[in-house]
Image (cartoon, rainbow, N blue to C red; front, side, top):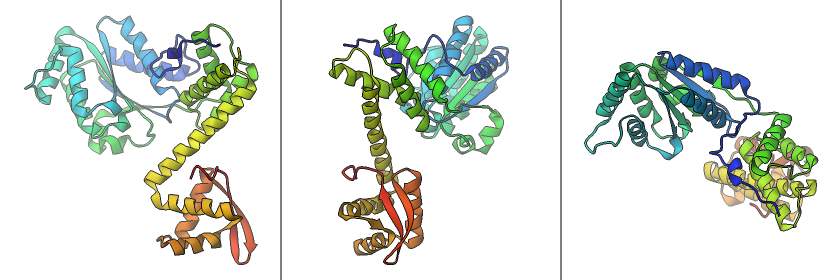
Length: 353
């Protein structure tokens, strides 16, 4: 049986060594030095989920906080907070318990006074900032704090590449003049190195075939590059190995774990379509139903749409089909048979829909 420290694969784990991301570490470290030297600054970090934004930021800010007695990093996960609660967290970190009658203006003023009196440096990190409702209101208060005190830094972490102006508005964005730092996806070799590093920290030894780890890394590289997904596949493979009473994770076991993850991704994709594009999902159900009966052509789909009374034009249907193909749900083939011009091949298990 395989015993391990699962914390090494959790989202809160900060590794002893960061694989790759030297440039990103340097940019964040330089930003923090400027803040410590008296320049109030904002840094906007963006990139798709699971590619190291949070881990690298926390790794560098932890080092910064440990190296300076008069520096504090306030790390907030915005998806779990309202702007009011986030401001209270900042106040509590600097001034202590928030009084029941203390308004936001007074909180900002007291925090600023305390920072100036103690000549303290703070860096506020707002992770998952694009997931906070009305986050602009919180950032206005932090901007007000920056106007009142020195050595205040703000780091915004988001998955939205071009959405900072939309999140903050032109006026606030121009006042902050944020630096930007983008995180690109890892390649397969780097993903494998990250996985091997976490395995060493969790187990202290090799517990998987080399080809098995390569297969996981290549799968993640070909999908979304998400390191969290990679860890999920690995842990699933480890559980499958335990169930089979294996001492090592084999390539065969990894193939099974990857197939399970593909099914999970597909279900999530279909749930998203069902929730955000219900009419497109209904068309997808029609395609699945027709596939059970035989070959599917656009003409058949149009007939079924008319019978169902769906308000879907030919142009909209073409758009839906192209979207489904880009999502990997179907393949479109040019075809002419009995007046039907396009043939659809379903690429997902019909039972899922």
